[in-house]
Length: 118
Image (cartoon, rainbow, N blue to C red; front, side, top):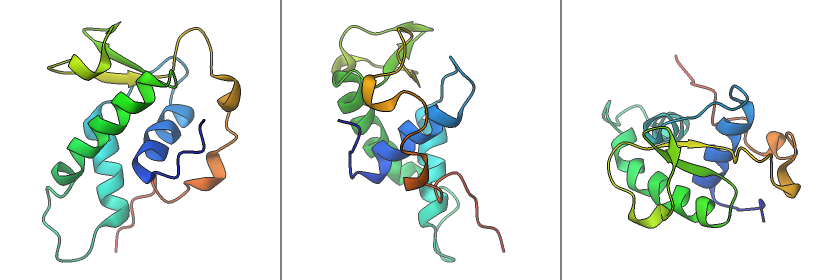
């Protein structure tokens, strides 16, 4: 079920798919990318903080679905909904899920990684 229709879940999966193999990302990185994609000229510089709770919520959903792993101190957590503290996200080590073997969803989210600067 990688057809999420949620831009934040798509941003998490996109950043993991295009990142270093076996690498991880932080919730802040995803929130900053989403905020930059939606930024208006009068938005505050810390707009990304507004998106951080939604990023964490979508990460828990994706972890429960087995699409990503939540890491605490470099190790996968057992219950994603109860994790506290500093966490990172990565694709499951056992390999990609059948729906997302390499980069089948890459064309759907090209604007998230880009940072428009005038």
